[in-house]
Amino acid sequence: MPRPDAAQLVADNLGRLPHPNGSDIRFMHYSTFGHKQDVVERLQNRAYDVGQAIIHLLESNGYVLNHRDDPAPADNGRVQHATIVCRHCGGHIARMPLDADNMATVSRIGLAQLQDSAAHECPAAPAIETPDAPAQDDDDA
Image 1 (cartoon, rainbow, N blue to C red):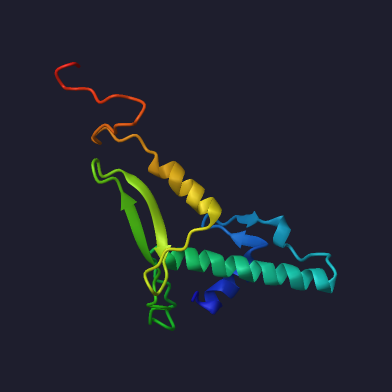
Image 2: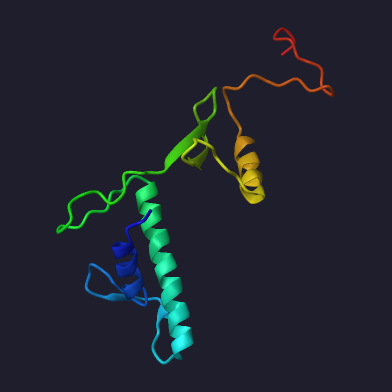
């Protein structure tokens, strides 16, 4: 679970994000200036969701967020990933997060993207015979 304090920090600064060079990056969709209270609350809730997603992205890719006043790592329950590579050339095909039971859950869109990725051209893979095309002998080539 993402650190709620770090997610809140991102949420509080999302409308005007301070850059290391001293300037600010303005995300106008998250600015609460001039809005009615119900809109402000919705914007703040959405900004917190964005903050949680950013912290989750960092933590699930191996980053450990610490605070100098609380040096203990935030969450050791890191997301494990399965990397799918080509058996012949070692080329990267896909990377999927695994849940606590080491199961990867894929949506229809994710499955379509996985199928597109799996169709990669591998220079080291042996030719696949199809019923329509006769197999070629090495002597004929």
